[in-house]
Structures are given as structure tokens and as C-alpha cells.
Amino acid sequence: MKKLSLMIALVLGTALMASAQRYCVIDTKYILDNIPEYKEAQSKLDAVAEQWQKEIDAKFLEVDKMYKSYQAEQVMLTDELKHKREEEIVAREKEAKDLQKKRFGYEGDLFKKREELVKPIQDRIYNAVQKLAAQRMYDFVLDKAGGVTVIFSDTKLDKSDDILNALGVKK
Image (cartoon, rainbow, N blue to C red; front, side, top):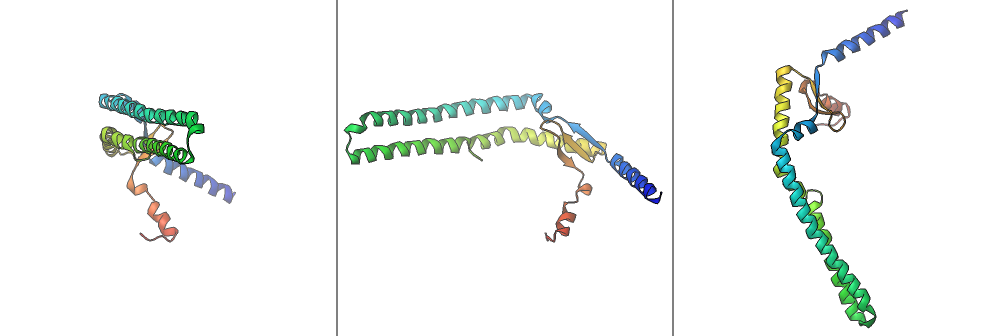
């Protein structure tokens, strides 16, 4: 009986604590889709990406032509000329791959362009979320756009430092 009473008290306490936290849900995809500047920025990004992709495709097409030409002439070339042509093909292919990485790789030109065009819009949204959370006293703001993600939480609820202390990590 004592265990049952303790269990009921524990469940009720947990339920009261959970209900004391205020939260809301937002959909950032919906918000972004309804901001004209975002649509314009996305169009610019798509155009730039398409242009860069055409440039890269042209370089790979050139490498392909060089390779096919080499294969056709290979039997008539000396070993020295074969080696030279192979090096040229490899060098051109490396140039094309390097350009592809420069344009589309991690922190490449497209990433920087996206940051230049989209980040200010995302920052405005984040600031608006923070303002709304402060005005309406929300502890959490959840984003349902890409699964549920916490994009704001009240700092008094963040127990990360306590966890670090428990692990023996000093800040």
C-alpha cells in the first residue's frame, strides 16, 4: 500500500511538472515558404547552382572527349606520349573535381552564397521566435518542419552544465 501511494505521488508530481512547462510548435518550412524574400533568394541560389553545374558538366565532358580520343589514338602513340596524355587527362579530371568541390562541397561557394542570401532571413525568424517565446513565456518552441526539433528553450531549463560537472568536465 505504501509503495502504491508513493508511485501515485510520483506520477502526479511528474504530471504537474510537465504541465508547468509552456511550449508551442511552429513550422519553419511554412514560414519560409510565405516570405517573399526567401523565395527570391532560393530562385537566385537555384540559378547560380544551375550555372555552376553546367560549367562543371562541360569540364567533365571535355575530360570524356580527351579520354575517348586517347583510346582511339592509343595504339599509335609511343609510351612517352601515352604517359603524357594520361597525365593530361588525369590533371583535367582533377581540375573538374576540384571545381565541383569548390562550388558544391562542404563550405563551398554554394554554401557561402546560401549563407549570404538565406541566413539573414533565418536570423529574422529566429529573433521573432525568441521575442514570441519571451512575450508569451514559452519554455520551449518546437519546429515540426523536419521532425520535432527544439529551436528555443529557456536557459533556466538547460542542465547541460550540470551534466558536464557530473562527468567531471571543467569549463
